[in-house]
Length: 187
Image 1: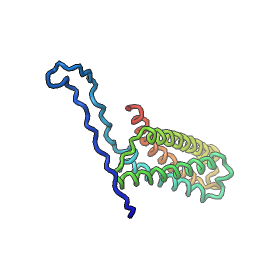
Image 2 (image 1 turned 45 degrees about the vertical axis):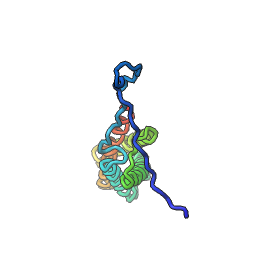
Image 3 (image 1 turned 180 degrees about the vertical axis):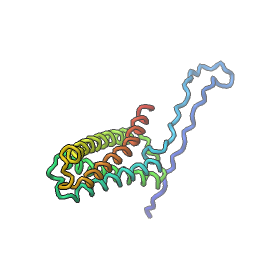
Image 4 (image 1 turned 90 degrees about the vertical axis):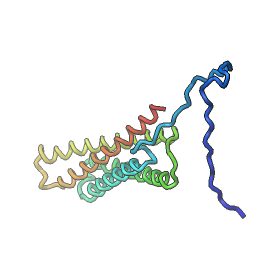
């Protein structure tokens, strides 16, 4: 009968740093054992990281839906870019939230350097794209509202709301990127 068994990972017995019992041994082990960094809330695999991912996902999806429901967003390139960037941000945040949920359920730490570096690169790319799209959309919204005074003919409130949601999504993705990058730097 094939039954799956849980894996047990024993803790390593760290060598002592003293010179032995007599003190006259030739043990030159003067290095202190490396200590693993604690999981800081906001890093991958923590409840804080999951909360950040959910906030990123919700604000990106709201911005995407609000912008996509307007009839004249395809006529402006910056608004199309905002839809693409928030779509990418929402997919990235959802996938990372699923990974965080899995890590929390199985109580597994995601502090592997390859995993953290892929999270940092992905967060850096998506946050940069979202910020650029939000800035471009904010510029077009200000142009339509203040300079052209044609908000009566456009969906200015929806444009402003979608742009604000993109900025919120960027603002909540920035701590994820910075914590992942800091975690890589401290290794």
